[in-house]
Amino acid sequence: MKNVGIYIKRSKPEAGAAARQLINWLERRGLTPMVPQAEAEMYGLPDGRPVEEVFGTCDLLIVLGGDGTFLAASRLLTGRQAPVLGVNLGGMGFMTEVRLHEVPETLDLLLENKLRIIKRSRLRVEVWANAERQEYQVLNDAVLTKRALARIFDLRISVGGNFLNTVRADGLIVATPTGSTAYNLAAGGPIVHPQAQVLIITPICPHMLTDRPIVVPADRVVEIELVDEVDVFVTCDGQEGRELHMGDRMQIAASPDPLLLIKSHKRSYFDVLREKLHYGER
Image 1 (cartoon, helix red, strand yellow):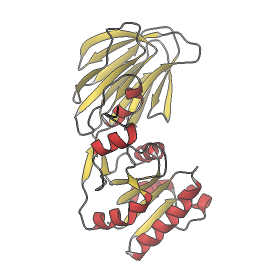
Image 2 (cartoon, one colour; image 1 turned 30 degrees about the vertical axis):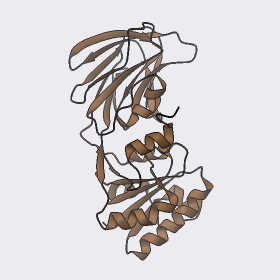
Image 3 (tube, helix red, strand yellow; image 1 turned 60 degrees about the vertical axis):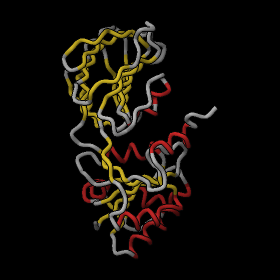
Image 4 (cartoon, helix red, strand yellow; image 1 turned 45 degrees about the horizontal axis):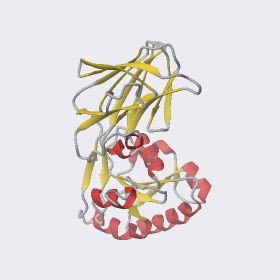
């Protein structure tokens, strides 16, 4: 390991000081820190590089921020298998498990090959709209929702080439296990351990009480077609997307490009559930 990318949340004043300390720590150990140019200029940091160079050549990526910053970094890292360490400067911190004061110890253990690196599954979302095809890499979820003032709408859903149903609802979520604790959970979907190889399909406020969330194997392709004359928007990881219209369709499948996540040695997934969601409390 030689090149270490540092991706920083822009709206956190303390992120600049944390990045400066991290740069000094890396340089003392003979590693090369790389910061995207925009963030380097914002916080007055050295080693500003084009963002393509940072994400295209780093051997390790350290994310200083919250889960939103982590999702953005994951999207920029598509196509490379560099492990990612999330350092929590945000609120929830499901993916940014490591706390700021734990960084030196965590990095020491990483350099000694004493930390687990696990694979988090992602989705490949293909959208055909207006005779155009767009593809997205998704770590949490793809969400279809109605536009402002629109009524509920109909979506035809197939799984693995088999018709599932036509759901009439305010929207639909297709989530990874990592995304099961995000919008999926708020919409009544299940919590799924992130190592499970599944996809989660959750209607949002369905018209029929029998339209319940369903968990399907990750090797199945989920096909969705908008069969209603209403404007809909698909959002991927809450950060990018596009409009859909009647007849537009999507295919959602497990991506061949998983994310490599460096696990905290301080806490398990279940520790995070209890800490962040107060799981099981009375």
